[in-house]
Image (cartoon, rainbow, N blue to C red; front, side, top):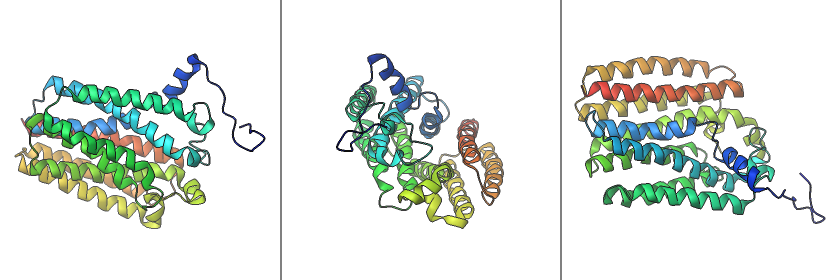
Length: 299
């Protein structure tokens, strides 16, 4: 990147045409794995809270909301991390890190997505609207946790899990104990899969001093992920028990435990960045299995 006489980066002047291309890159438009991982816990909550027959209107709102809030979330992440991203092989070409977009442009897009989110919220009940600032606060706070907290992925789990809380509130207009178990399960799930995701950047993160569960767990990462996933399944089982799901749900959890155990065994080996990303993406399937199990469990 060229620099001025004072040594500051000289950012290119994007044209309106390529600004849209850079926006697509900024919100990871071609890779919606994150949107699906954010959406799925909300779908779990919608189906479970509605005893298998969720409102089509709520399904539409939360599906659109997952895309909007994931887009807002990655913009907030890139605004906070652009200096770090320039030093990481996988992220140095991102629009803010490379200078293809200015921070002011990213902030404009962020505000646009947040306005869209507020518009979607206006169709929901007052309890859900009161819960929404917590979702925004968690999304905004998460990018900064990697500076001081050794397991920042835990805060990502809280942020992703809060969608389930809001979906439950939108359906039942109350917060039940089973919902909190579902929230805890989602937090554990995100902690597990994002630890796997963080393996892609472990070497760079060590070099630049970024905190990560992929670093702090060290040689015991496989064991930590395994324990976290066991706790996740236990929380899901408790939520299902409180909501009187049938045996099919627990059969699905048993099958899921078998699949996750195979992932854990692979983590005992040296994992390449491409393999870590592939294992991370497999968790979309994990979420779909849980969703199907919840639905079948209500029949």
